[in-house]
Length: 93
Image 1 (tube, helix red, strand yellow):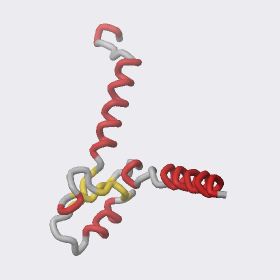
Image 2 (cartoon, one colour):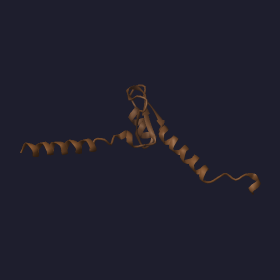
Image 3 (cartoon, helix red, strand yellow):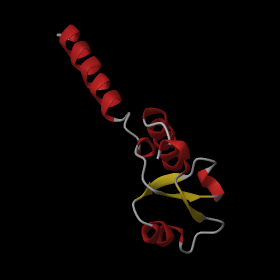
Image 4 (tube, helix red, strand yellow):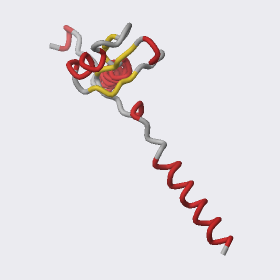
C-alpha cells in the first residue's frame, strides 16, 4: 500500500513539474512592461501597446517597450533571406 501511494505521489509531482514549466516569459509577445521590480527582462505578455500601457498605468517607474527578442529574430530572418537569395548587382540587369 505504501509503495502505491509513493508511486502516485511521484507521478503527481512529475506531472505538476511539467505543467508548471511553461512560464509566461516563454511566449514572445510584441510588447514588454519594463522597469521597477520587473528586472531587466520585464514582463513581455502583452499583444498590444494599449494592453501594456493599461497595465503600467498608476504603477511607478514602469514603461512599455517593443520586445527586443522579436526584433532580433526578425533581423536574423532578414539575414538568412539575404544568404539564400544573393543580391543582384547593377551589372546583372
